[in-house]
Length: 467
Image (tube, rainbow, N blue to C red; front, side, top):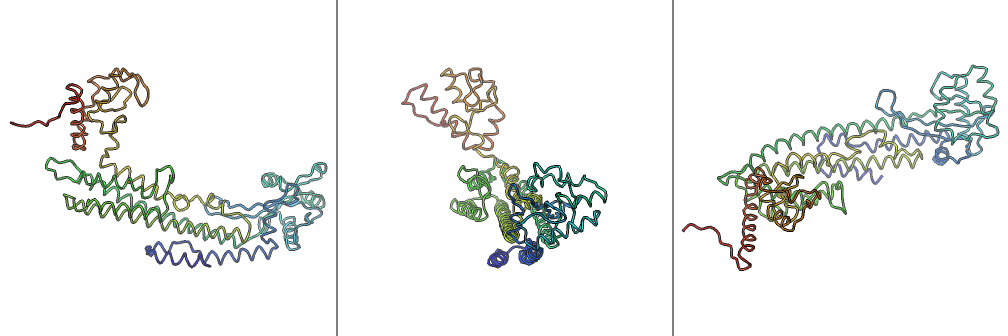
């Protein structure tokens, strides 16, 4: 009762859109149907303890049961089915552990099937003669896995069926249940509706990402008139990547983040932008509007994650309650059989984060993608070896002087073969265009290092000046 109340309160408190709330898991309705399921099973003599023994029988048990959630024909809707393979002798169930109600139910269904072999409901049963296995009897627990295939292929005349009823044989019967089907119809329909809702929200967020990409690309285009917010947006996206709001690549907490952690990381990201005065330092007014849209996009994604989580918990809780009341073990099988691409898979935040990284954040080149793997400064001027790895020219000169032949990354014999022809002029121009400050600093550092090599440690670097 406590979770049902908390579930309603959370839906109200988090201020989700009304059409979202209408599609939330109907936890209260499912609880009512679950009570009918438990009552129906108890009326048939299948209390939780009896079902537990049937579903997890001992190796020598004369009967066993299986509860499956299979798709009904070509439909994707699940059809729950409880089947029992039982050892019959003279039309009577051979098992002392059965309750009188369970024994009467099974014998009644078996008798119905003997008289109405063509009708699958209320029971399906096909006897198999067990007279030849008197020396090595087959237990129901061992043969249940293949019984449906074997028994369905067995055809006998009315006379043979009558003789088999008097002999020892196994019968596979389907216990006629109603309310478990109603329970899973409600639950599966809601999961499908939630999947459709999340798919729709994901498409809307992807469209917003594409629109933001075009706008940010225009705002960060390098300009000779310094009318560009390239540096500001680069810092913003660097902070966003450091925050790892929805997905972590750290070793300790690798993977998708919970909505609570994501909210904290998003708050940290906004606080860091405020501390660095990034919003006020924009040179173009449209950049502020684009930033508002970017933050709103993250807020919408956070809401989707929160809504997804609370519905996942509701489904987990109701399935656990179903298992507690029935011992049918659906909490493990339902998520597999229902084939939920969004809600139960929990992939929305991960997919949107990948989309933002690919289509939006990548619009602004990050210097971390252009660092020399030896000195960890910008790889200016870039030398591309024959193995396609890129290093700055100073590091290549140093390892050539040490007569090292192999690439530091792949160990290919390419270092001593490098020459002026290996300078990547196009990449050098790209670095000067998108990283002018870093390229100038690296050029100055190269000149100072070369001056010390030529003139000794007393060398003092001086900038060019016009006399």
